[in-house]
Length: 218
Image 1 (spheres, rainbow, N blue to C red):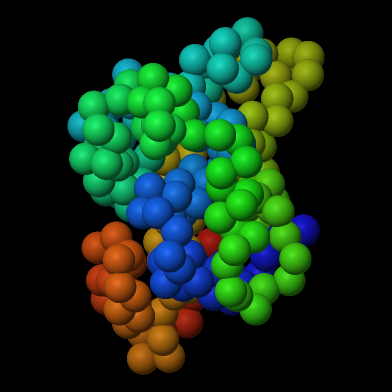
Image 2 (cartoon, rainbow, N blue to C red; image 1 turned 45 degrees about the vertical axis):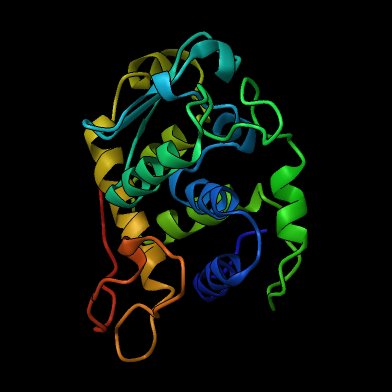
């Protein structure tokens, strides 16, 4: 099930107003922005990231494929990861277990956190974040090949081979647009981001309240 833009906004508000741990709030937000699978995020290690270049390279062995996956990072994602560095207690993992810094959090941790939310949003599962991003980006007019590349839905045959290394710059622009769009869903009618206690700075900046323009890409 894909969430509506309004539901994305209400969900993020509920996440940041909840009592869940700070790292878990940021993890759920990053899942929305980066379009990766839950396991790809919670098992991430710091040596996969180059925050100065706003890049994340997920190794092939973690992707269970024959190649690594490149994730361009939006400004908002970089800011969250910089904060997470200070929360990781020197662990090699971005999301270390509380009791064992040499291993990541359990796979059920974020699911439990989501189930605890008090939010008026239709029943959903964490994988719906990927469906939501895909639906919104396609409806906004972005090239479907760029979206599929972010989701690692690889094409078969000659076209798939050709597309393996394609769309890096286009995906970077698209994911920045997506991060800004997600920010915009947490705005009030006056065009300013609601001041939700504990949200990253990117969620509080003015973004303007005019009508959104439908974009056509590719």
